[in-house]
Length: 343
Image 1 (spheres, helix red, strand yellow):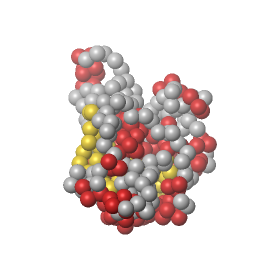
Image 2 (cartoon, one colour; image 1 turned 30 degrees about the horizontal axis):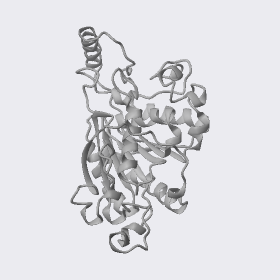
Image 3 (tube, one colour; image 1 turned 120 degrees about the vertical axis):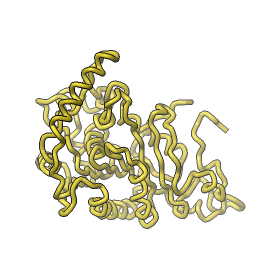
Image 4 (spheres, helix red, strand yellow; image 1 turned 45 degrees about the horizontal axis):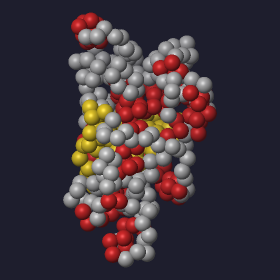
């Protein structure tokens, strides 16, 4: 047994999967390539095949009915600024049981870059973090641990800060995403070549050079157009704008912290000055004009609450999952995974 690699469910007798906390609600695990980052899962035991490579006609343990099950699709749900990763998983457990899928919820903690760092993961790249690559490393670990989950392409969802992460991740790694939900982001990145990242994409090749080498250092509109469907959703009453005095205080304090630290400056988000409804509507119009498949939904009667718009998100995800199953998506292998660094 290679103890430098994650423990695979293929190595665990089926009757011990729940006792080893490898199925149902799986506790937070530290990411091997960056232990500051962690993730939790929900893997429905009754729908999970722990080792699809086994011959289902074998005798003994290998004859267990679970070894005849197909692979599960994967939904990744990205938390907002409050980091309520438990809710990101909990809200989707019923869906996972009914529609046969696995749920992954990563946790990007605060204070990675400085004491006031709430936003580094939303930018994908900051002074000490590559959140997009961390997510792909998480997916690579899941691939190794869970051979019964199809991770080639995943369904990606996020609310608030998670919505910021999701739409920027689509710019850099569109080939990994089957469909996506962008929920109520306060600030967005435009497909504008006159503005630098994260306001626009003028310097995206410089910021994410290695990942965009195949597309000449630019966002691939062709790959974005291949994504089956993108939902943009926001509460109708989500019209509050953060206090400008706080924005000014935070800007000054970050300057003080930077001078007290190593002095390096990083990309940062501009203060939120317009409502999330207006921001998301504008992004939808931009993407639609470029031929990217998006739907824009306003959920009336709710403000900035993930609980309030979750039923609308779930209603979007259900047909996507059913299309996945009906199209035999689990048999398609088109993407090379990131390798897992040895511990």
